[in-house]
Length: 261
Image 1: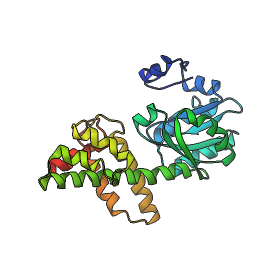
Image 2: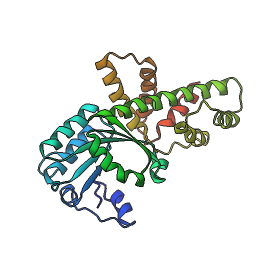
Image 3: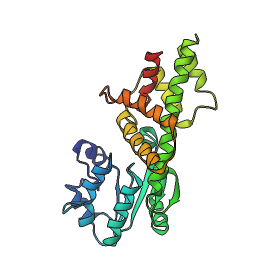
């Protein structure tokens, strides 16, 4: 059974054989295992809490796998609320954009009870290529923030070197193609080179979500006293691109740097 506040998104799965849930409460009352992925902490609270939320309506014995990129504290709050109702809650953060999701080759980072994670892992092959248990509640989302910090900073670095290469007189297409064949480009960034070469910034991981993640990352860094100067700089350029208001991929910082050079 599936449910989405955007009916069109749910209909895509219904067309492939899924049953449409008429509400969150109906889905929660029906499902043995509930997977959720929403944009931010406010959406997590909206989905799970209140009279019509998942926690209030979940049937006995249900399990929750919450996959949103949120602060570890948000995951821990949901874990504790679930425990009060006898419902195991895992934070299983997703690494991988649209192509990985469509091919069932995502990477997952899990936090919560180890036994609950091992039980849920029986379902993971349907969506993921690999998964890792990272520790107690909040650990899955913590690992996702680590990974996305590297993702965002890496994209900014690529944007800068591409702008440098063009200004050094290297042919743009040859620069993109050759850089993509070197070992310094991470797999997560490789496909971005191909689309950016064509000035195609169709969102797979929208710049607005990268900006949300940068805010989470830097907020925790300040709280913990961890200096992250490269991340601060990358977040600034990502914010500049996000301010354009277009629904574009976070790799659009490549265009930003090209235009600035």
